[in-house]
Image (cartoon, rainbow, N blue to C red; front, side, top):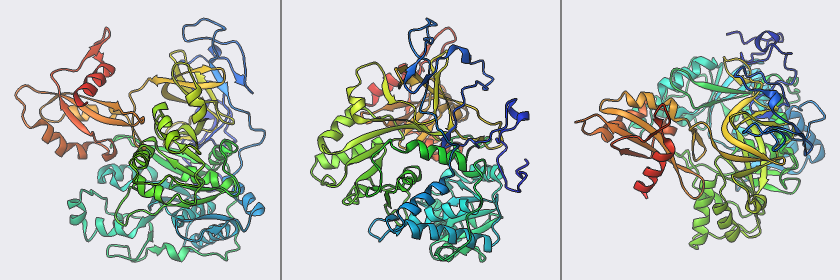
Amino acid sequence: MNREDAGGARRCDARRSEDATGADGDPDGLGNDAVAEIVGDTSGEGRRHDATADIRGGTAAAGHRGDSKAGTAPRSATGPTPHDAPADFLALLAEQVRLHPDAPALGMVGDAPLSFAELEARIAGVAQRLRDNGFQRGDRMLFSIRPCADAVTLIFGTIAAGGTIVFVDPGVGPELFARRIGLVEPAWAATESLLYLLSGPLHRLGRARGLALPAFGRLPVRHIHSGPRLPGTPARSVPLRRLLGSGATAAFAAADPAAEALIVFTSGTTAAPKAVVHTRGSLGAGLAAMAGRSSLGPGAHLHTEQLMMGLPALLAGARWSMPRYPRFGTHIDPVGFARGLDAATHAFFTPADLAVVLAAIERGELAAPRALREISLGGAPVTTALLRRARKSLPDCEFLAIYGMTEILPVAITSGTAKLDFDGAGDPLGAPVRGVTARIAADGELVLSGPNLCAGYLGEPPLREIPTGDLARLDGDTLVLMGRKKDMMIRGKTNIYPGLYEPAIANVAGVRQAIMVGVPDEVGDERIVLAVVPDPGATDVVARLRRELPALMDTSALPDDIVLVDEIPVSGRTSKPDRAALRTRLADLLD
């Protein structure tokens, strides 16, 4: 794999070229978090672009319906077209520094925040000290530090130094972790010192607590540790606190929109992990697309641990505060998070977490945050039932539903009011955001492109557009979700693809057939249920699966329930598993 471009910066194999795509080279550096407006069909999967009609600026041209009747429904929609090339997101941040140097920018809840000028100086300081320690333009850095203000500063500083942040989940298991490392070829690793301890001297204790961690201290990379230097921390590891500080005068690395910025792993098998590559240009385009879609601005205060929600807040001139994680935890209790919202005007929740908070308010265990005026929701479908509950408990608050995916974020944003007022079939997502082109393929699948589309998957051909797996239609210029073409399930913040795991599960002794389905609840989250047809005479199948599944699949995809059934319902001439019928049966059984 050649990761050296002409300027010496390492880039993913998914970068665009005439040879790879048969099209012009990509000047915009498309990446995961930004979408470039690409109308041409280069998927190679037989999708006919001449069967689509464009909607630009809200004006619909004649098009085709899924039933091939012309002129009755639009097949494509495009958000407002950007007039300028995607801006580098650090340049966008610098503009806020110029406009509001002394305004509060970033900090932990309960701490005095850094001002915009202080944040910029700290980012520049991290970038310079990384270079002083041997960091080179194009280096990739594994990142295993829980969200906090110092972690955000290190992320910004790494990208400012011309590097790439690679988000890795240490809980995926040593084998999948090793595969991911082999794909990424990192030069650095930023890790919490507790992980060095629990994967090294106290690895037996870690395993006893259910943590199958890779040996972080043995990774052949340069190390940065967050927290005190605990046993197992490599001797030459650089303390994060040594990198922090201000006073550096060195400029950021020259902005290259096509340069890697973030790599994010998605669901994948041990043999074939998938890594989404975002560029500085794609990040800038995605963040620009958020502008004006919420009430964030100077004087506003967003509280969240989510990077892709906090960044738009900073670039709008708002303050971003972050919650504190439990010392040994990787999850923030939603009610505890809500207790930290007293001064916040804006917050982000998944629908499932908001449901927990609403229940606490309804029981009188939690007072409704007084200053809160807007809540953004994402990561799972936002149901009207949840919105009605939310309006009752938080009557002075507006709600935004954000639709997107790791490969392209955001895609569409709509208000809770618009969702509740919608009286057609399906789930309204809103109009595509700035620059995003959405088209409906002949089979009803939603296909997306734009300046915030990722460059591609690491080591794979570049992406010009991406099929979402969602079935959708267009109501005017509003995207309306009709269901899922693929069988992807969503639990919390995790997308789960059953086809990745079912073959391996079926190979477990005593299992004749295994199908995973999601049983939705009223807040739009899904309970993952594994239905198993056991071999005749097999015993202890459920117990065996509980023991063996953690070694066969991502821990984030493990089923909530395992149910033994006599048969899996089938449909169609080929007798494929009927997941919808199975989902209904299991919902009745588990009710």
